[in-house]
Length: 303
Ligand SMILES: NC(=O)c1ccc[n+]([C@@H]2O[C@H](COP(=O)([O-])OP(=O)(O)OC[C@H]3O[C@@H](n4cnc5c(N)ncnc54)[C@H](O)[C@@H]3O)[C@@H](O)[C@H]2O)c1
Image (cartoon, rainbow, N blue to C red; front, side, top):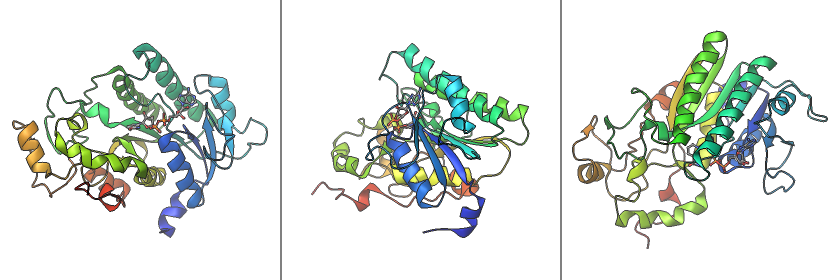
């Protein structure tokens, strides 16, 4: 459903990095659906329409010159004033590559994106932070649930350390430029509809998905959050947890906490399957409203 007020607040032309990735594909499709002109960039894919349809530029974000060209219309056939950047490109989890390789790629890519946006005079940057900064995998229990944005980052991996540093870096970029709006979205574990078939199997062992408090984000709802964040116009750096409204489990959220983290304070009366990753701030300040649930796609009992 289109929202005319939201649409009028959206930038006209946006660069999306990580465009051929899992979240990037959903974000590019969604932004184009709501009428945003998207220059999709990634270092992988792009010639195959199954990756990403429409305008695409192959860019290695660790090379500053390439990022500046992408943002300033310097690459042939990709002119047009870029009004905002959505930065999703990264090695997307701990343990995929050696730590130093993950850090070198993700920190250089994000610095280059933030710095090139500044050099190009782009005043809106939305980027993918991560739920990991909340203290995943919670070998040290969370301070309380639902976890929210009110306690300092607790990165427990090199991947997460980099996300925490990006949040800090954004604060300084905004201190340098009082007109800049930077929104960090702390996405939960990204899921496509095909992923939901495995969800009923999670129920057998509550420890299986303890590492992120049984949270997830449907890629389409992640895309909605990006759209909302692009319309956010309050200068400064801010961060928001982005998850679905429910957990991946059939058991109640209260019973999961009682069994797995019995000593942790539960700060509100929880709905039956209510997320333990609070999305209240995103709801309040971005107008984010998840539209999807895995329960709409598979039978939770696995039948
Ligand atoms: N997948 C999750 O569960 C999850 C959870 C929280 C946050 N995130 C974050 O969301 C973002 C998107 O994740 P995803 O699941 O779509 O990952 P993905 O691996 O599917 O996509 C990431 C894309 O970034 C590109 N990329 C990486 N380094 C690059 C570079 N130097 N230059 C150009 N392109 C580069 C890759 O080619 C890839 O297409 C990432 O920032 C990730 O850290 C993901």
